[in-house]
Image (cartoon, rainbow, N blue to C red; front, top):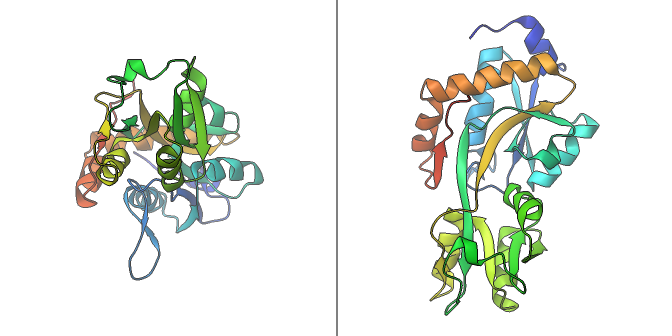
Length: 244
């Protein structure tokens, strides 16, 4: 896939590619135990993008996906590696997904809820990380159940337990870990959504957005995404299908 100096200049106008990372997504980002520097799947993708552009990469860690999305309007970053959601697309041009993460529910011991379809009922309260991609999906699609929003995965789990809520929404891998801390609880089969992890850039950068879409299709087709999933030892994610 050819790289032009014009694309590099549009995508990284400061001469350095500023890559915004959602550090709340433990499947895609983490901190190195010794240095504290960001690492993980999203970091590997940002560095591969910088390599192809011939541009140094500055990693910009944010505490939440909402903080990443908010920062685009101030021009703080050039690419953001977060879930693609319609609520974020006002100011961000997204690629198609490079990988998908299954989102489902955890229910407490002795819960009458048996399936995903049982959750959206009157009176059901769901603990959830606010402004996560799956929370945005649920906010658009739930008709009857109510979301109880918290600022972190851990806070959502603690609220789920302390307030005896009916379900906790989250990424399957996280909920499987939470289930180990609450004996008798169950992670429901299936999914209510597959979070589409993508790359975004400010919406005004049309040429850069086209390049990023080609880049994502290439790293999926050539096996790069599959390799870094394996190298990082991450479970609960899968390479997204090719774009139509």
